[in-house]
Length: 323
Image 1 (spheres, rainbow, N blue to C red):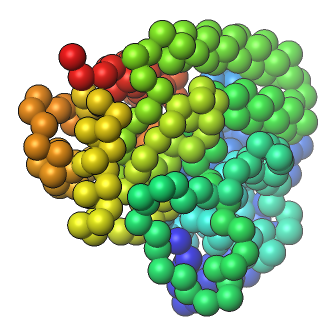
Image 2: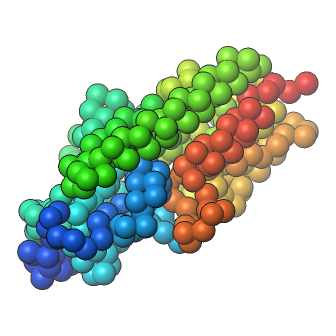
Image 3: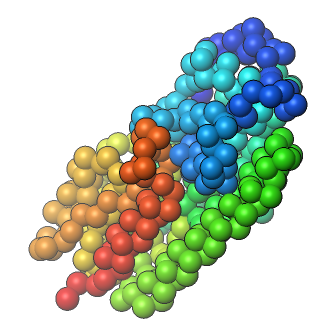
């Protein structure tokens, strides 16, 4: 989703005011780390471990802000400029970051999509999917899927580099960060194995998502087939008759028992798909896109792992054929 030119101008002008504010990694104040999406925040939190008490970890998309519509405030820009490390994904929804970094070259940043390199996939349009209208020549360039965090493999690779960066800026605690990272990565491996087992034993390896589809990396990891209404970054909210009718037929043909929507969905499209299929007892299940979560710094807060575990339970139910 493209940011408006006026926003870009605001970012550039704002950052020019903050140039030179970047904190030295040698000062004795708390380590200042800024992240955009929830996954980057939580991975960093896990690697910091107990040292989070000696750090200021800022999560820009807190309180349920959507990645695709987020616009940085002047306070956000100041936090980035003063940080020791700024961690972001680097996809289409974060194009504003490039202007921030151009305006203040002292910012120490980590772009996760650069870390993943060849593991980054282009957005995919599958059969029956409603495609967005093209907006001229700029749309001819490849559009890469920014929802990299839905892959547990990507999470592991991202954590390694976050750990490396923390070790560089806070060498005295490097051993702690490495130990925390090793422990956390084992949890990621364990959960990956659970996913593999569920998919291997499933009745079907096909899902229908009557919504946007930000799970490209998830299904690639485990060989799951999918049909969906829109691509992951689509701004569409109303599906055409052709799209819902196609999904209704697939629901019948694949003998599926569920239709999936994203967290926060009004389920309107899912209900249209089910009505069109004329099938009874079709469930609507909710998969969490994992892009954002509200964090209050309490013990009961959601974590990347807890959301991924909940998604596994949803997937387990979705991969069951009708009786």
